[in-house]
Amino acid sequence: MAVADAIQSVDLAETSLRELNRRLHAADAAPQWRVAHPDGAHAVAVGIDAEIEVDVDGHVGYYCAGMNKRATVRVHGNAGVGLAENIMSGTVVVDGYAGQSCAATGRGGLVVVRGDASARCGISMKGVDVVVQGSVGHMSAFMAQKGCLVVCGDAGEALGDSIYETRVYVRGAAHSLGADCVEKELRDEHVAELRALLDRAGVAGAEPAEFRRYGSARKLYTFDVDNAGAY
Amino acid sequence: MCGIVGLFAKRPDVEERLGALLGDMLGQMADRGPDSAGLAVYRDPAPAGSTKLSLHSEDPGEDWSVLGAGVAVHASHAVVVLDGEADDVVARVRGEFPHPRVMSAGTRIEIFKEIGDPRRFVERFDLASMAGSHGLAHTRMATESKVTTEGAHPFSTGLDLCLVHNGSLSNHNRLRRMLRREGVAFQTENDTEVAAGYLEWRLREGDTLQAALEACLVDLDGFYTFAVGTADGFAVLRDPIACKPAVMAESDDWVAMASEYRAIAVLPGADAAEVWEPAPAQVYSWERRGDREASPVARPLAETGA
Image 1 (tube, rainbow over the protein chains, first blue to last red):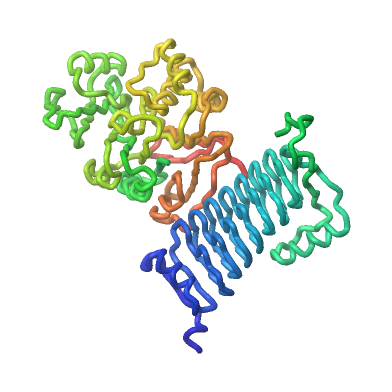
Image 2 (cartoon, each protein chain N blue to C red; image 1 turned 30 degrees about the vertical axis):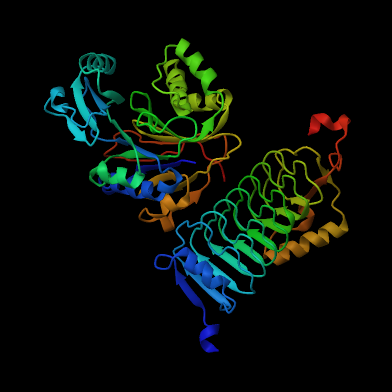
């Protein structure tokens, strides 16, 4: 099976995006792929459901690796809006920055951003783990329900607004906390969780003890007229 | 939706190809705004004591030659340089030639805009032949007002100034009433024209461009990514919520902004350029310093670490 095991190269300057995604979705897709000239194209490597690895050389547009299941997608460049939106499992790594709504609604897997992620990182995340080596923009972890958001830099305004059970770890400064988001004690189990996440993400030089933990005050789960001003 | 592109040349060879490069960028944004397109290009400064006008006529048989021998016709538009200060020249042209519409006035700016497919616009106005120091272009998907030539972007906001916009404003009717009381004239029911009129008013009242854009953050309700062209450069502002996309990039040869990276990817050297997303509620601007032939230097007035 030497041919099938060889790295499959696809040049998006020559091959259409639909053809790339069709090949990645094929039941007998090769285990390793290299994609050239993405040039900001949207929907690169979306909807994969296979244990394959895809390396993209360049910047991608919106929704790269959306709905990813089991695959490892690495972007050697920046990613636009909605990176790994609704990721189910697998790993998505971006060497540069990620645009707004990174890992939105993600249900599982790991998303790693080596640079900064923009606003609404981890919005409505439902089980995905997100590790950002840089900073995140405003309204990150908005209505986040499950999983962990790790920010090695700073967080923008209204971090964790209306958060449910996601655990948020920030090493730098949180500009402000959103409604019902509070700082919580960083206990031993959190240090262990954080260490494991940083190791999985390949982040060196950040000590778990340097982070602060944020989570839900659990006051907005059900409507209470005493909290009306906070909704 | 709408798409915005902007390009600022840092080298003479990029100035030579400015229109061609902007046309390539605009083509990438065609599906963000398929109903109209427009361009503001800055080039060929008018001599001291004269004013350059861009005019538009809906009459395909318009006899532009009555404006003089130096008139340059570009499809439905014409550019002419006339002796006199801007206010006098505009008043004179409006008096003598009431039919054509004044799209821009200044010394360097030229504005062209039309309804229809942006790719067709690029061909029809022969962007490939246009050199210039910098320019902005826009593809429109109308949401707030009719698809008309005058509703297309860029909008003139004063001498050598223009505005392109991605987004929509919620309080434009109230603002338009206020601005009319302040003596600002409007030609359409378009929301972006109100933002342009607002900037024109703030600048007239003595604001710097930076201060006028920061005032937008207070007075404009809605969502927007703005790009503002000036005689010497351009500025970019996103609303505090930053719903509308923007990407910026800088190489040794140029500074570019666009709604999406794919419009920047067509530029030579894009692979090696520094690329970032402008932060919300922050003014980014570039302009030339000193003698532009000797030192075409771009200068970011404000930058974040983002």
